[in-house]
Image (cartoon, rainbow, N blue to C red; front, side, top):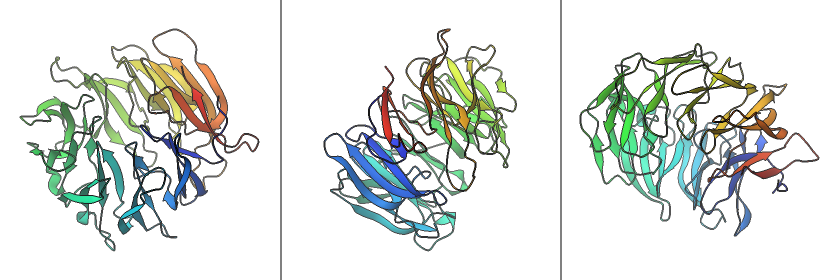
Length: 405
């Protein structure tokens, strides 16, 4: 284990030139703090204060640039969309005073383009939302859509972007806006397959469909009611979908079904009812052999972690109380266990837990890597190391990198 890089609280791991991006949260109640970037070449550089430290995909990075929501007002109602390089050599303000509550701004990278979702300053109406693509080097904007919706998707390769407009009309676009393929149907939400060849989406009829990114007639995969596509397996053969949500606790009932459109339709497999999953995303192991999900989620959105094979069979419990998990290579999973939740609910504090790793493809018991670390534990871009902090331990306060192989 390497020594801590700097006192603070870890926020997220990047890739490429940027080793780490983290926020030292100065205000737990408003979830704002100091945003700092670190690279091996230039060390640590403070990019800004009053930065959103979670949510709205902020900060976001393509490995060479960082975009975030910063200069947040004291009441948390407005902020600026900012762009910079990790050495703080090219600060730019893309949009100033954009709304953050009624029409929340969002930033994400799609390939070599920065995509910004924002309403104009002074607006509180989601109908005013615009989707804009920026060249991060020149900050030159290209409007992709007006009257847009926030529930879009980007494929892993960054070559395709799902753009949903008012009335649930949707298109699959290139991030620079030069290509656009309309979808024959009304779309609520969707996800791209990992190879970027197809989009699996939920229609306004609450059925699940699959359509090639090049266009064509959609194939119905699953009749409704489907609330959302929670995740697709890396091999594109399976989908996890939800059928309902409890707005008090966020509990979601999850089902496993076929998603490639080539194999015969399968009867959806109930993973566990209610499955109570709030950690939507990375619901499959990297080899697509296992499904990961929460059960018995509490008021803080933490719960027990379970794994079940995509071929069926009984589920295996991995953790009794966890903040979440990360998939590694093969069937290996990294997760927190024995979570100690904060005594106070004032502000954002995920608590602390034991950091464990298990290989579901073997009968080996889980291995504890570190005891009672901050529950947010992202991995580096190559999946070979985990980064964690120990904010609540004055003697060990800092950010640590721990190799996983």
